[in-house]
Length: 216
Image 1 (spheres, rainbow, N blue to C red):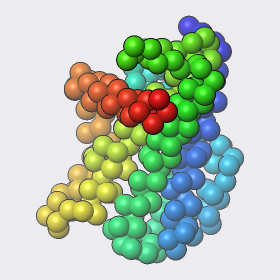
Image 2: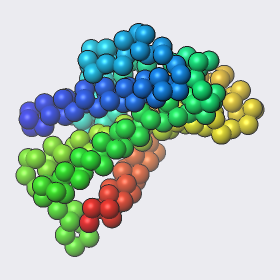
Image 3: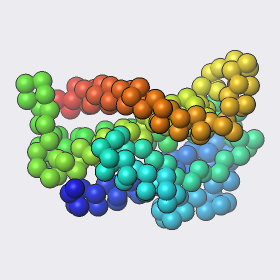
């Protein structure tokens, strides 16, 4: 275990968690809901956002176990009744969190290419040196956060987008499932870990190929 990689990943997780939640909160604020601001969540102070287990313990444990890095934070309080755009407003608030993780992955990947920490040779790409290892882990972490949160199962962010585009019968189903949704998510991770890993690995590989297409 490389302590430097773990420390850098720890810092990156905190930074990423804060920006993810700020993206939710600021989008809601711009759409008319001031709840997050009133409760002090439009802040760069990580103590206002991190959840000790979901933000720190879980992602570090998954990293040490060699599994995709996932995690979360204390949900930003949103009052959907105050949002402009109804369900579409809520969908926009929800998707801005994962999109922030995607953008961070893109930016860190660009830094890796610019500093030659990521090298493309013969159609394959490699990481160079300790900096390459650290940047690679951060890219994979951010993509893991992105891909996990867009899964359309309540209460994950992707479910808000599904709700916005669905007919009433599907919306009613999502409302009924939401109280138990987190158990469904954990069941997916535990009992369908193989399927989940293939989804994550395949999607990450496709996104990284897209990044190389942009930066190559």
